[in-house]
Length: 289
Ligand SMILES: NC(=O)c1ccc[n+]([C@@H]2O[C@H](COP(=O)([O-])OP(=O)(O)OC[C@H]3O[C@@H](n4cnc5c(N)ncnc54)[C@H](O)[C@@H]3O)[C@@H](O)[C@H]2O)c1
Image 1: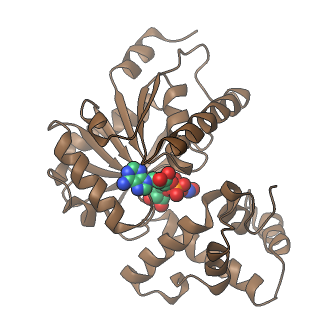
Image 2 (image 1 turned 180 degrees about the horizontal axis):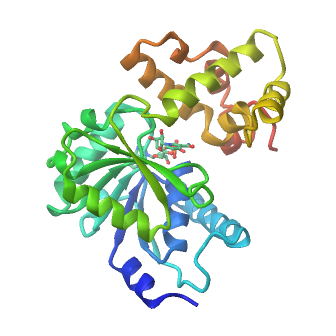
Protein backbone atom coordinates (compact mmCIF):
# COMPACT_ATOMS: atom_id res chain seq x y z
CA UNK A 1 0.00 0.00 0.00
CA UNK A 2 1.05 3.60 -0.52
CA UNK A 3 2.64 5.22 2.45
CA UNK A 4 0.35 8.27 3.02
CA UNK A 5 3.34 10.31 4.26
CA UNK A 6 5.24 9.54 1.06
CA UNK A 7 2.22 10.59 -1.02
CA UNK A 8 1.78 13.86 0.90
CA UNK A 9 5.49 14.56 0.36
CA UNK A 10 5.07 14.04 -3.43
CA UNK A 11 2.10 16.44 -3.44
CA UNK A 12 4.26 19.18 -1.90
CA UNK A 13 6.28 19.40 -5.13
CA UNK A 14 4.94 21.07 -8.27
CA UNK A 15 7.33 20.22 -11.07
CA UNK A 16 7.75 22.11 -14.33
CA UNK A 17 9.90 20.55 -17.04
CA UNK A 18 11.14 22.54 -20.02
CA UNK A 19 11.95 20.41 -23.07
CA UNK A 20 9.77 17.41 -24.00
CA UNK A 21 12.36 15.34 -25.86
CA UNK A 22 14.15 12.16 -24.81
CA UNK A 23 14.88 13.40 -21.28
CA UNK A 24 11.82 15.58 -20.73
CA UNK A 25 9.58 12.57 -21.38
CA UNK A 26 11.79 10.27 -19.27
CA UNK A 27 11.80 12.59 -16.26
CA UNK A 28 8.06 13.30 -16.65
CA UNK A 29 7.29 9.56 -16.52
CA UNK A 30 9.51 9.20 -13.44
CA UNK A 31 7.81 12.12 -11.69
CA UNK A 32 4.21 11.21 -12.61
CA UNK A 33 4.88 7.62 -11.55
CA UNK A 34 5.99 8.92 -8.14
CA UNK A 35 2.84 11.03 -7.72
CA UNK A 36 4.24 14.46 -8.65
CA UNK A 37 2.19 16.80 -10.85
CA UNK A 38 4.11 17.90 -13.95
CA UNK A 39 3.82 20.92 -16.26
CA UNK A 40 5.71 20.05 -19.44
CA UNK A 41 6.76 22.86 -21.80
CA UNK A 42 8.02 22.69 -25.39
CA UNK A 43 7.97 24.91 -28.45
CA UNK A 44 5.04 23.38 -30.35
CA UNK A 45 1.89 21.32 -29.90
CA UNK A 46 2.98 18.49 -32.21
CA UNK A 47 6.04 17.81 -30.02
CA UNK A 48 3.84 17.91 -26.92
CA UNK A 49 1.28 15.51 -28.44
CA UNK A 50 4.07 13.04 -29.29
CA UNK A 51 5.50 13.52 -25.79
CA UNK A 52 2.16 12.62 -24.15
CA UNK A 53 2.12 9.31 -26.08
CA UNK A 54 5.77 8.60 -25.20
CA UNK A 55 5.15 9.34 -21.52
CA UNK A 56 2.16 6.93 -21.48
CA UNK A 57 4.38 4.21 -23.01
CA UNK A 58 7.19 4.90 -20.55
CA UNK A 59 4.79 4.77 -17.59
CA UNK A 60 3.49 1.41 -18.83
CA UNK A 61 7.07 0.16 -19.22
CA UNK A 62 8.04 1.41 -15.76
CA UNK A 63 4.99 -0.27 -14.24
CA UNK A 64 5.76 -3.57 -16.02
CA UNK A 65 9.35 -3.38 -14.74
CA UNK A 66 8.02 -2.86 -11.20
CA UNK A 67 10.03 0.33 -10.62
CA UNK A 68 7.17 2.61 -9.52
CA UNK A 69 5.78 2.78 -5.98
CA UNK A 70 2.97 0.20 -5.74
CA UNK A 71 -0.57 1.64 -5.64
CA UNK A 72 0.85 5.17 -5.70
CA UNK A 73 -1.66 7.60 -7.25
CA UNK A 74 -0.14 9.03 -10.42
CA UNK A 75 0.56 12.74 -10.76
CA UNK A 76 -1.28 14.87 -13.31
CA UNK A 77 0.35 15.95 -16.57
CA UNK A 78 -0.29 19.38 -18.06
CA UNK A 79 1.41 20.31 -21.37
CA UNK A 80 1.92 23.85 -22.66
CA UNK A 81 3.90 25.95 -25.12
CA UNK A 82 4.06 28.87 -22.69
CA UNK A 83 7.08 29.23 -20.41
CA UNK A 84 4.92 31.51 -18.23
CA UNK A 85 3.13 28.34 -17.03
CA UNK A 86 6.27 27.43 -15.05
CA UNK A 87 5.68 30.42 -12.76
CA UNK A 88 3.85 28.50 -9.99
CA UNK A 89 6.23 25.54 -9.87
CA UNK A 90 8.25 24.70 -6.75
CA UNK A 91 10.94 23.10 -8.96
CA UNK A 92 11.78 23.75 -12.61
CA UNK A 93 13.90 21.23 -14.52
CA UNK A 94 15.47 22.52 -17.74
CA UNK A 95 15.91 19.71 -20.32
CA UNK A 96 16.28 21.54 -23.64
CA UNK A 97 18.96 20.82 -26.24
CA UNK A 98 22.66 20.88 -25.22
CA UNK A 99 23.26 24.20 -26.95
CA UNK A 100 24.49 27.00 -24.68
CA UNK A 101 22.51 29.74 -26.44
CA UNK A 102 19.21 27.82 -26.14
CA UNK A 103 19.81 26.92 -22.50
CA UNK A 104 20.79 30.54 -21.77
CA UNK A 105 17.51 31.91 -23.21
CA UNK A 106 15.33 29.38 -21.40
CA UNK A 107 17.10 29.62 -18.03
CA UNK A 108 17.18 33.42 -18.09
CA UNK A 109 13.47 33.63 -18.88
CA UNK A 110 12.37 30.95 -16.40
CA UNK A 111 14.46 32.40 -13.57
CA UNK A 112 12.74 35.75 -14.13
CA UNK A 113 9.28 34.13 -13.95
CA UNK A 114 9.53 31.97 -10.83
CA UNK A 115 9.38 33.17 -7.23
CA UNK A 116 12.55 33.39 -5.12
CA UNK A 117 13.05 30.03 -3.40
CA UNK A 118 12.06 28.00 -6.48
CA UNK A 119 14.56 25.22 -7.12
CA UNK A 120 16.15 25.50 -10.58
CA UNK A 121 17.65 22.30 -11.96
CA UNK A 122 19.46 21.88 -15.26
CA UNK A 123 19.69 18.40 -16.75
CA UNK A 124 22.82 19.55 -18.59
CA UNK A 125 25.09 16.83 -20.00
CA UNK A 126 28.25 18.89 -20.33
CA UNK A 127 27.68 22.66 -19.91
CA UNK A 128 29.12 23.62 -16.49
CA UNK A 129 26.71 24.82 -13.79
CA UNK A 130 28.91 27.87 -13.03
CA UNK A 131 28.51 29.00 -16.64
CA UNK A 132 24.73 28.71 -16.37
CA UNK A 133 24.64 30.41 -12.95
CA UNK A 134 25.62 33.64 -14.72
CA UNK A 135 22.48 33.45 -16.88
CA UNK A 136 19.91 33.24 -14.07
CA UNK A 137 18.59 35.81 -11.62
CA UNK A 138 19.63 33.82 -8.50
CA UNK A 139 22.66 31.63 -9.22
CA UNK A 140 22.56 30.18 -5.68
CA UNK A 141 19.23 28.47 -6.51
CA UNK A 142 20.64 26.58 -9.52
CA UNK A 143 22.00 23.03 -9.37
CA UNK A 144 22.86 20.43 -12.01
CA UNK A 145 21.15 17.05 -11.90
CA UNK A 146 22.28 14.61 -14.53
CA UNK A 147 19.35 12.21 -14.73
CA UNK A 148 20.21 8.98 -16.50
CA UNK A 149 18.35 7.47 -19.45
CA UNK A 150 15.93 5.74 -18.88
CA UNK A 151 15.38 7.92 -15.81
CA UNK A 152 12.84 5.60 -14.20
CA UNK A 153 15.08 2.52 -14.52
CA UNK A 154 18.45 3.90 -13.39
CA UNK A 155 18.20 4.89 -9.73
CA UNK A 156 21.48 6.78 -9.46
CA UNK A 157 21.89 10.39 -10.61
CA UNK A 158 24.87 12.73 -10.64
CA UNK A 159 24.29 16.00 -8.75
CA UNK A 160 26.56 18.89 -9.73
CA UNK A 161 27.02 21.57 -7.11
CA UNK A 162 28.11 24.85 -8.65
CA UNK A 163 30.38 27.31 -6.84
CA UNK A 164 27.35 29.49 -6.04
CA UNK A 165 24.85 26.68 -5.22
CA UNK A 166 23.61 27.30 -1.66
CA UNK A 167 23.11 24.84 1.17
CA UNK A 168 19.34 25.58 1.04
CA UNK A 169 19.33 24.58 -2.66
CA UNK A 170 21.17 21.34 -1.81
CA UNK A 171 18.48 20.60 0.83
CA UNK A 172 15.73 21.23 -1.74
CA UNK A 173 17.31 19.03 -4.42
CA UNK A 174 17.71 16.27 -1.83
CA UNK A 175 13.97 16.50 -1.03
CA UNK A 176 12.97 16.38 -4.72
CA UNK A 177 15.26 13.45 -5.54
CA UNK A 178 13.97 11.58 -2.49
CA UNK A 179 10.37 12.15 -3.66
CA UNK A 180 11.47 10.75 -7.05
CA UNK A 181 13.02 7.68 -5.40
CA UNK A 182 16.51 8.50 -6.75
CA UNK A 183 19.90 7.93 -5.14
CA UNK A 184 22.59 10.49 -5.85
CA UNK A 185 26.24 11.39 -5.51
CA UNK A 186 27.36 15.03 -5.41
CA UNK A 187 30.35 16.24 -7.41
CA UNK A 188 32.04 19.58 -8.10
CA UNK A 189 31.49 21.44 -11.34
CA UNK A 190 33.48 20.74 -14.55
CA UNK A 191 32.59 20.33 -18.25
CA UNK A 192 30.90 16.92 -18.70
CA UNK A 193 31.07 16.30 -14.90
CA UNK A 194 32.14 12.69 -14.16
CA UNK A 195 29.86 10.53 -16.28
CA UNK A 196 30.09 12.31 -19.62
CA UNK A 197 33.75 13.28 -19.30
CA UNK A 198 34.31 9.51 -19.31
CA UNK A 199 31.42 8.24 -21.43
CA UNK A 200 31.33 10.69 -24.35
CA UNK A 201 34.99 10.29 -25.45
CA UNK A 202 34.47 6.50 -25.17
CA UNK A 203 31.47 6.64 -27.50
CA UNK A 204 33.38 8.93 -29.89
CA UNK A 205 36.33 6.52 -29.92
CA UNK A 206 33.99 3.53 -30.47
CA UNK A 207 32.43 5.31 -33.48
CA UNK A 208 35.94 6.07 -34.81
CA UNK A 209 36.79 2.36 -34.71
CA UNK A 210 33.72 1.65 -36.87
CA UNK A 211 34.65 4.57 -39.16
CA UNK A 212 38.19 3.16 -39.59
CA UNK A 213 36.79 -0.30 -40.46
CA UNK A 214 38.42 -1.96 -37.43
CA UNK A 215 35.12 -3.54 -36.35
CA UNK A 216 31.37 -3.28 -36.90
CA UNK A 217 29.12 -1.56 -34.34
CA UNK A 218 27.84 -5.00 -33.25
CA UNK A 219 31.41 -6.23 -32.68
CA UNK A 220 32.55 -3.14 -30.75
CA UNK A 221 29.47 -3.40 -28.51
CA UNK A 222 29.81 -7.20 -28.23
CA UNK A 223 33.40 -6.83 -26.99
CA UNK A 224 32.59 -4.16 -24.41
CA UNK A 225 29.60 -6.17 -23.19
CA UNK A 226 31.34 -9.56 -23.22
CA UNK A 227 34.81 -8.55 -21.98
CA UNK A 228 34.21 -5.49 -19.82
CA UNK A 229 30.70 -6.25 -18.55
CA UNK A 230 28.99 -3.15 -20.00
CA UNK A 231 25.23 -3.69 -19.91
CA UNK A 232 24.85 -2.12 -23.36
CA UNK A 233 27.82 -1.31 -25.58
CA UNK A 234 28.80 2.32 -26.32
CA UNK A 235 27.11 2.46 -29.73
CA UNK A 236 23.79 1.02 -28.55
CA UNK A 237 24.07 3.60 -25.77
CA UNK A 238 24.71 6.31 -28.38
CA UNK A 239 21.49 5.33 -30.16
CA UNK A 240 19.57 5.53 -26.87
CA UNK A 241 21.00 8.95 -25.97
CA UNK A 242 20.55 10.43 -29.48
CA UNK A 243 23.53 11.00 -31.80
CA UNK A 244 22.49 14.65 -32.36
CA UNK A 245 22.64 15.27 -28.62
CA UNK A 246 25.98 13.46 -28.40
CA UNK A 247 27.51 15.62 -31.13
CA UNK A 248 26.27 18.80 -29.37
CA UNK A 249 27.65 17.54 -26.05
CA UNK A 250 31.01 16.52 -27.55
CA UNK A 251 31.31 20.01 -29.06
CA UNK A 252 30.66 21.56 -25.65
CA UNK A 253 33.33 19.31 -24.14
CA UNK A 254 35.83 19.93 -26.93
CA UNK A 255 35.40 23.72 -26.77
CA UNK A 256 35.81 23.79 -23.00
CA UNK A 257 38.57 21.17 -22.46
CA UNK A 258 40.49 21.17 -25.76
CA UNK A 259 40.62 17.36 -25.47
CA UNK A 260 40.98 16.01 -29.07
CA UNK A 261 39.14 12.81 -28.02
CA UNK A 262 36.03 15.00 -27.70
CA UNK A 263 36.12 16.34 -31.26
CA UNK A 264 33.10 14.51 -32.79
CA UNK A 265 34.27 12.01 -35.42
CA UNK A 266 33.17 12.15 -39.08
CA UNK A 267 30.90 9.10 -38.79
CA UNK A 268 28.83 10.71 -36.02
CA UNK A 269 28.66 14.01 -37.91
CA UNK A 270 27.51 12.16 -41.04
CA UNK A 271 24.78 10.33 -39.10
CA UNK A 272 23.46 13.67 -37.82
CA UNK A 273 23.48 15.13 -41.36
CA UNK A 274 21.59 12.01 -42.61
CA UNK A 275 18.98 12.36 -39.85
CA UNK A 276 20.08 9.02 -38.34
CA UNK A 277 19.92 10.17 -34.71
CA UNK A 278 19.39 6.77 -33.11
CA UNK A 279 16.26 5.25 -31.56
CA UNK A 280 14.31 8.51 -31.75
CA UNK A 281 14.49 8.56 -35.58
CA UNK A 282 14.41 4.76 -36.04
CA UNK A 283 18.00 4.53 -37.27
CA UNK A 284 21.46 5.24 -35.87
CA UNK A 285 24.29 2.72 -35.49
CA UNK A 286 21.45 0.14 -35.55
CA UNK A 287 18.11 -0.07 -37.35
CA UNK A 288 14.96 0.12 -35.16
CA UNK A 289 12.36 0.35 -37.92
N1 LIG B 1 19.50 11.96 -24.22
C1 LIG B 1 20.07 11.54 -23.09
O1 LIG B 1 20.28 10.33 -22.87
C2 LIG B 1 20.47 12.55 -22.04
C3 LIG B 1 20.84 12.08 -20.76
C4 LIG B 1 21.13 13.01 -19.76
C5 LIG B 1 21.08 14.37 -20.03
N2 LIG B 1 20.73 14.79 -21.29
C6 LIG B 1 20.63 16.24 -21.50
O2 LIG B 1 19.23 16.59 -21.36
C7 LIG B 1 18.93 17.72 -22.20
C8 LIG B 1 17.83 17.34 -23.19
O3 LIG B 1 18.32 16.29 -24.01
P1 LIG B 1 17.36 15.37 -24.89
O4 LIG B 1 18.15 14.18 -25.27
O5 LIG B 1 16.05 15.23 -24.21
O6 LIG B 1 17.20 16.31 -26.18
P2 LIG B 1 16.03 16.24 -27.29
O7 LIG B 1 16.63 16.84 -28.50
O8 LIG B 1 15.46 14.87 -27.36
O9 LIG B 1 14.90 17.20 -26.68
C9 LIG B 1 15.12 18.56 -26.47
C10 LIG B 1 13.77 19.25 -26.49
O10 LIG B 1 13.96 20.62 -26.13
C11 LIG B 1 13.01 21.36 -26.89
N3 LIG B 1 13.36 22.79 -26.92
C12 LIG B 1 14.33 23.40 -27.64
N4 LIG B 1 14.30 24.73 -27.42
C13 LIG B 1 13.30 24.95 -26.53
C14 LIG B 1 12.77 26.11 -25.92
N5 LIG B 1 13.27 27.32 -26.17
N6 LIG B 1 11.73 25.97 -25.05
C15 LIG B 1 11.20 24.76 -24.80
N7 LIG B 1 11.66 23.61 -25.35
C16 LIG B 1 12.70 23.70 -26.21
C17 LIG B 1 13.04 20.71 -28.27
O11 LIG B 1 11.89 21.04 -29.03
C18 LIG B 1 13.10 19.23 -27.87
O12 LIG B 1 11.81 18.66 -27.76
C19 LIG B 1 20.24 18.10 -22.89
O13 LIG B 1 20.90 19.05 -22.12
C20 LIG B 1 21.01 16.78 -22.87
O14 LIG B 1 22.39 16.96 -23.02
C21 LIG B 1 20.41 13.92 -22.29
